[in-house]
Length: 302
Image 1 (cartoon, helix red, strand yellow):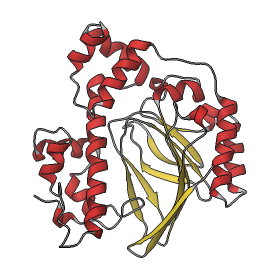
Image 2 (cartoon, rainbow, N blue to C red):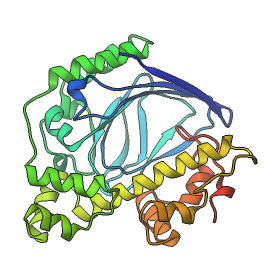
Image 3 (cartoon, rainbow, N blue to C red):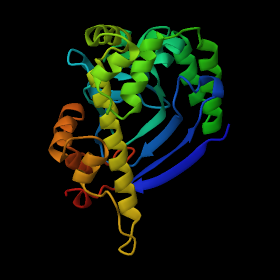
Image 4 (cartoon, rainbow, N blue to C red):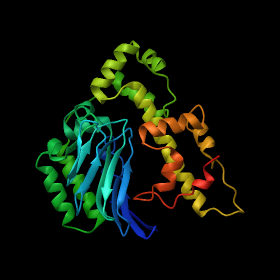
């Protein structure tokens, strides 16, 4: 396995880490492994964005602190390792200028194969990773902390996750509905999806929520939000390195909204306030920890 490393400085802090694809046998269930070590930042909070993937975080040193959870009934807390289901609310991640660990993004099928439960069982709660992996969670953290080599850490993840895999599936109609709603970046209509898989809209809604823990409409909202979030980050990164001799395309919020399926900029701003807790212009202006380079909100206010 080859771990692709990277490092950059922002606002006096240094962000470094590595990314690698998991073992091919795990790829239907996981995105890339993302290792991070962030140091020297001013203490503050980072917004944990909703997404179409379940989140797993395994810390290497200090526990991760969530002063505000994504579930309205859950108090904040501290975890050495955590897992969370799908949600349409942000959480707040507190930090003292330092974080070190590995983040994983699981597919809903990955929840069944690796956790042994449907995504809906986690809901929008944040749980200790031992609740879904048992004692292997502590073993995973201890073994990764014992080495400073990212490739070795990712190999440990491969080994333990492969050993945890179990036979599981999601009903074909639900898998197809998920693919249509999230693979189209939220552009697919729920009624059209129900018609394609041969179910009524009401039946799809009930079965979908029982498997994924969110409604079909919210799955589409999350996919569209992810698309806009990804594009905004790309635009900000490109704008930071562009020159006057290299004009930029798609650098206004209105253009990002149009490119990612929103009716207009106001529609995107409303969705961002609900899903991220703040409009995109504000996020670009304040989010410098941990994964976003220097923001350039003046280029994105059109």
